[in-house]
Length: 95
Image 1: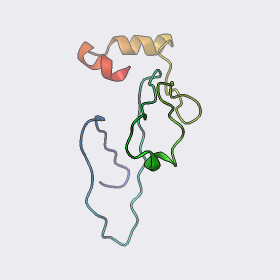
Image 2: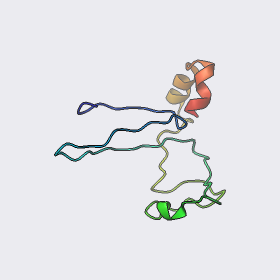
Image 3: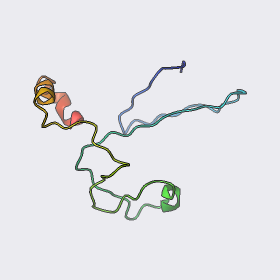
């Protein structure tokens, strides 16, 4: 992708990139957006060692705190009005 571009994917979309053979390093930022009541679900995960550098995601506990900030509060009247105008088929993916 060109400098400054972004790519958005549904969490279940398989995606990736080819090997970087250039002289320049590849940099990326990943943001995973989820509902504010999302629970940790790592019990039985086969590669727990791969999560060692990540914040704790305790099983069945709400993911909150400084590593899981609330991006917007849907109790805000202006935001609630905006959300009410999103077509119904898309509303579940926003919450």
